[in-house]
Picture: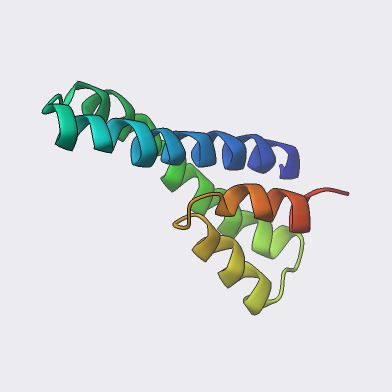
Length: 91
């Protein structure tokens, strides 16, 4: 399950960066909402899967609360999931 979480973590991070740094500027600078609509739903689903898998792994891997909270907060910080992958998920 940890491998699946790593994959979801990277996908969630990429979708967040695309939404934040490409789709949102296009929406506000060019007035084109197409990219936000196209990337918003997949990012939302990946975010929810990330949180659910993090909760499941907390119990499976017996993460302490501090580590678990850092992993959750990282999902809302740009590039945060990549840091989590490097620091906590690689063996």
